[in-house]
Image 1: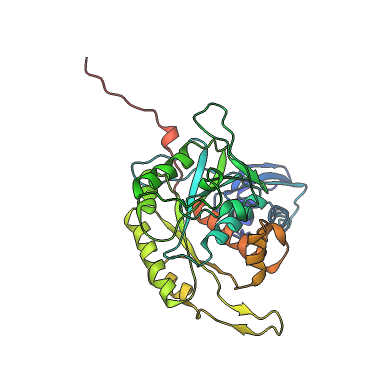
Image 2: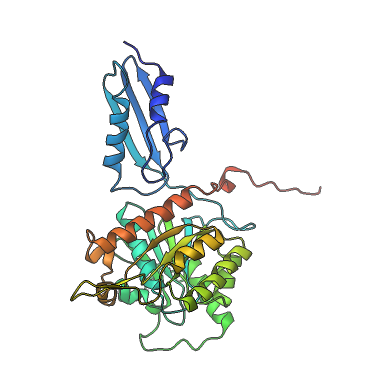
Length: 362
């Protein structure tokens, strides 16, 4: 008994990717579909890193196709293909970095750097090639959080190799100065340092470069928005009204310069007492979600205020690697997956597909 290709497509259109909530036909994830009599073979191409999801997705596709009458052997291959996506008008993605994601906040002390490093580690854990750029020139913290020490090597005297830990490539001004040395620099020097860290680091074929931004809306943020090809930005805030006030300014800044907002992360959402288990909303409740509704952006997730997150980051082993199967790591991984899916939904960068046209006057 032969099975029609249309019937196979109809069955696939009823199977939903649990992460994107789109069926595999609508999401254009089905590739190389072949029907030979009653046997079916196909590939499922995911636009986001999903190492932990592949077995479940393959099983759901096979189960869905088994509902076809008279079906024979079913072969399903699931893989990830991460592409470069469009950036601000007038800029092109970097050759060795497909997507740059800025992690920003309106003010300091909301856990932005901790969020950035755990998101980078979560994307890496799902199989992506990930880098982390510490753009907080005045207060670099990623060397400590990632447990990385040493000076970057240079092979040509003009560029430097990224240092690496837990599978994440990292570049920071913190590797180039003494730990206690203050950066007494004016704005132009700081923005030049940021560009050098970005462009003179030999990033090795990154799917994602996470940029840990300094707080505020000053020189570095302006440089990033005008000269660095950013795919999208994440805003980190706490539920506290004063933090939300500044976070809203940060969000509006990215909107003005044409950088899409991928979503908002609410940090320190609730505190759970380690002694009695009592939950207390120290910084208020629901502020991040309300901000998302006001600006029509996605709420990526809420993280609790726990001592473990702070202790693990201070020890150079952030939560995603310190307790990879724990509840908090699961939240970071879910946020990272949402971010990657948001990026995959953006228009693909086509600049490499078109030839450069030069008009000369003879």
